[in-house]
Image (cartoon, rainbow, N blue to C red; front, top):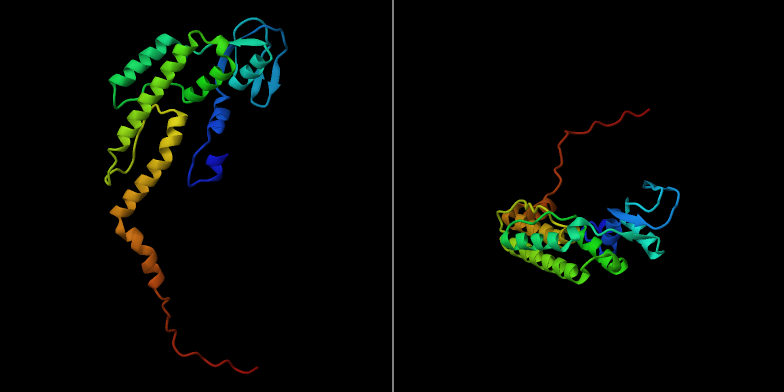
Length: 210
């Protein structure tokens, strides 16, 4: 992954974040009868027409084959999202709790299970508004960083938001630290100008001939 292969950036691409989000559990209602599936990450099933919890990747695979319907997560209801949006606007310094991969989960469901989402256009609009408000909070919070900032605590950020903020935060704090600690900059020059000291061990004795 890009974020792991380049430790200086620590950035994941959108497809990589979606891949990680596919391990989140969702509820489905199968319309088939099938024995349990035994996969590396666990056992799921048996499947018959009643609610079952499966990873998102499995739910999407069954949905693509018209083998199930995906139940919309509770946090994706219009009522719940409206409450979150209002709370986000009323609390300029706090982020409301949402699933860590709420952006990726909603995007995958919009793309592959749109017929299972009630009021999909309203839900999509509310999620976009929530993202905008939260990103505005992040930008406002970054403006308060100064040379005296040694750490930043941001609670309830999502994976996408952390992915955007982290590189800037790391570089900004490193820059502030270097400017406030000039000895850290001068150290390489000082180290390079030093010469190794020669220790005087006295006169050497001649070796005796054998």
